[in-house]
Length: 241
Image 1 (tube, helix red, strand yellow):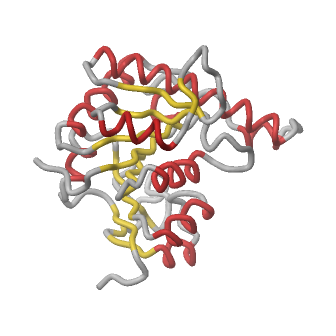
Image 2: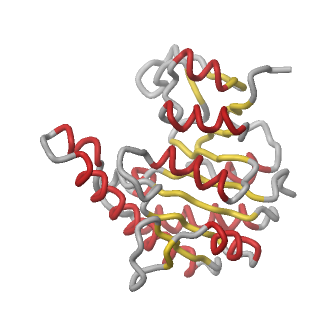
């Protein structure tokens, strides 16, 4: 199958790397993600990836317990770099050329982020993993994903989750939840649907970049989504026409 997009930005949560361990990194899950990304690259798409850190540390949670929010967010950003390095190792084992670029400079660990360097690696056929979120506190990795997607001129943001799209309620706790096949940005904002944080959705809306939400635990879903198969939920412009 051939990707409908030249360049995509894949957003993974840190929790996606835990598997069934409940915390940290699951080697089997890292291997699964690597194979799914390898399948995605075979569609011809250039791939950037933003990873969260919920499996290690959440800045907002730390702030809620009395920690300074800026300090907590910086700790969360550093945790995303740990996840990025773990993914780089799994991708390398799977034969995927990969580079980690960090929004917080740490040259002894990985390359520092620059838009030009990221695009250079993508054009060379390398998967680029963006660590440290946006490099700034008070912004989630959802917002960082949209920001990096726009900077590298991706045509779509692929949000991989534990469920098969966007629902009006949490389908994991409410069996009566209704799934949406398509949504506009305005609908997501008006309904306050928990797809991405509202800053990320507003940024995507302002710049017209499409978001696809799907279950990453189903083998082949990521590649199928970018190849136009009816997978998950598509969030786009302010009209379904």
